[in-house]
Image (cartoon, rainbow, N blue to C red; front, top):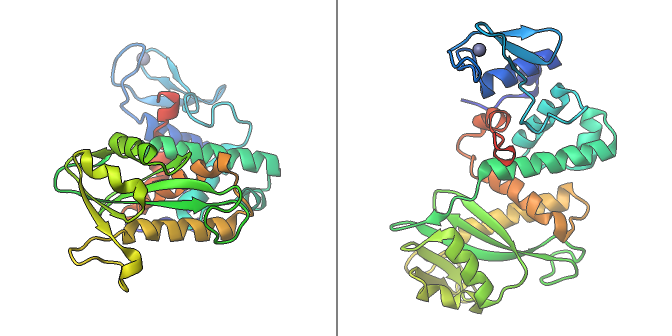
Amino acid sequence: MKQTNVRQFFAQFPTDEACLAHLFNVRFGQGHTCPKCERAAKWYRIKAELAFSCQWCGHHIHPMVGSIFEKSRTPLQLWFYAIFLFTTSRHGVSGKELQRQLGVTYKTAWRMAAMIREHMAAVDGESPLGGEGQVVEIDEAYVGGETPNGYGGRNKTIVLGMVERGGDALVKVVPNMKGETVKKIVKENIVPGAEVHADMHVSFDQIGREGYDLRRINKKALDAYVGPNGETVNSVENFWRHLKCSIKGTHISVSPKHLERYAKEFEYRFNRRMRPETMLDELLSRFPELGA
Ligand SMILES: [Zn+2]
């Protein structure tokens, strides 16, 4: 299935009312067991509230309760459209862009963007990578800040990236690249038994003693970035290239404080690159950060 385009989006979501009905359908749906009378029920839209009512006992379900839309005064259709933009853009969406597209104030747009990024991170989750028979590439990047392309420039944030071959990415902002720091992150996020590919950076030395099959690639010594036994960090380097290029193109500057959110936004999309058409409904149906 192909990803929805903007015309299809507005055909499906012409009004706030259509959005509310969709939110009910993806979160609960017709036949949803009533939490009060515990019967499988038909649910009827009631007009007095933004709610649906059980055919048997009249219990109300408010589709926005327990979602990121619950406390917002921004119309539901604008929220849906904002999320749509985040799922269809390859390079992310800046606050300015959202302000322009939605016709809301910059403050509102910025807050919506931050909430959507946090939501994407929560839905993506933090399942560890690796395990027996899996290959995981690990690499660090210095992202954001003010020095263009420089390593260790001012206000740069160190991000540690792990990408399972053919699978998911997991990124973590780290305070430094000390061996102990890297080892701790690896143990928390890669299941032992995995073959871990890393460059010659001294910070990765300790990983080999922790139950991982560590393979090194000396990038400086090779023309091609693949070692004699298939060692490579190409996947994770592609991830960095894409992230850095997008941050440079879309966002004027990203402070260390916000960088993790941006990186997680890319992680979310990367992990769904084979099924982009599922992103919108996934983001509308699950709110793990709110216990729903
Ligand atoms: Zn009921």
